[in-house]
Image (cartoon, rainbow over all chains, first blue to last red; front, side, top):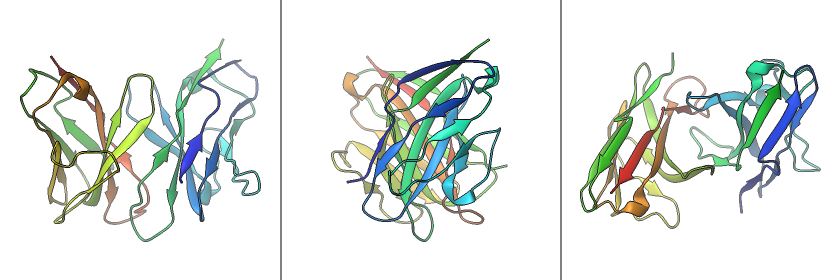
Length: 111
Length: 117
């Protein structure tokens, strides 16, 4: 079964501190992993995907197949990072694939 | 670019009535659109996958006769909640995958809040 687990519903860190949002998954195959972010009163938007191997807004995420994890990290948190973060996975294939979302983690950056 | 709109943004209806929600890709064509449901303080749950010109694929436990999906063009998919009941009250979100470009990417609409009295 496809499953995404985000163990922390809430995460609060101080500005300038490192932040890590945890995500573990279970999938019988080679998944694609994503992090989506939802800022206050805005729609869900893609933050990054593992296949791109890029850093967006200072965030990075590495796919660890051995631990089946895709944790999101940022070395120095900023107040504008406060948002709801969702980890998601999809199968690989031609074209659009359905997404399975984790429960989400609400990140609050304290000044 | 890659904007998805939903209409209406909010709807209140009486129990037993039907409600139609539209999802439009404004500046791109989408062969595939997805419909999600989100309960308060919970994650998005996929309801169905909508493909242009064909029948939607529903997730397990989603009643296809209750949630009618029509994807008549490459820029429009509609979700009709038939004979709505209070337990159908929720936040409905659609997403669209572009025909061209990175097809695995989904662009999300702003959501429609449905309240059934």
